[in-house]
Length: 320
Ligand code: ASP
Image 1 (tube, rainbow, N blue to C red):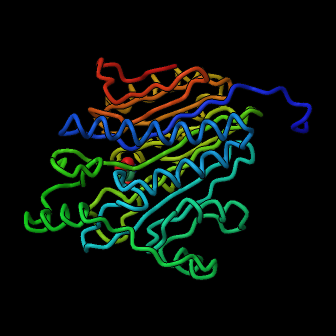
Image 2: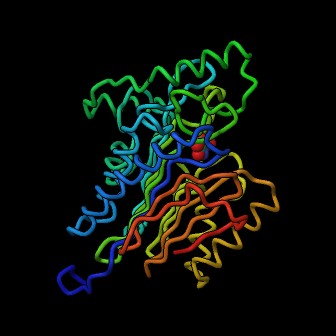
């Protein structure tokens, strides 16, 4: 079917800026809300003007990667050796194609490399390969380091790396010492009813060199024509649950999105995982879930913008 013969559907959008423990400051919450809403407004208007889900996802990921508050692109956390290594992936639900980069350094927008790899026969590249690709594509060398993330790493080094993860978001006045995580993700449904999803991260922070994040695996980022899911939280927990793929496959097998999310989060909670996810299905249902204390997500349901920043009713899953 060509686009001109297809019925237009109401576009939908949900994005996240990580999951973890509560933000330390109220100012932190307001600033995160502002950041997320700016991205929602920009990307949702693209969708309304007819952009594809894939274009919208890439744009949303770029904007979130460029925001130093979030742990992806600029503002990525440092690994144990003081280096930034980022991972990102993109999945187009219509073509059913997954692509991504793992532990890439010195680029501004890892999601752009994932986009390039959508058309390549080799679709997931690790550190060495992605560096080689960045050189081939003549992507300018970029330093994603921010003063706040460097300060956080130096403090952690003085404390002998006792924390297992870095702050969920970079907060200037009250560093978010107890929190973890901060990856970004975007899920979109376009006017043709097509789904796409992208996820990008600087990793957990302070991890071993070579540790692989869930964000550039189908456990953390997955889509079919029926549903699309982006995860955040402790990557090892997300991989153990195979969360994104599990939810999406359940929907493809006939479960409603709400039921698939509810089952998957009930299992994750029983298994004491620390994670969150955002999801959309092809009928336009929006859903989000978390076992962690907070999930920094915002969405556009066609009528208005909503968010999960103060969602704390003890439920594992929310639906719009
Ligand atoms: N899932 C990411 C990782 O483990 C971290 C995050 O979501 O913030 O690499």
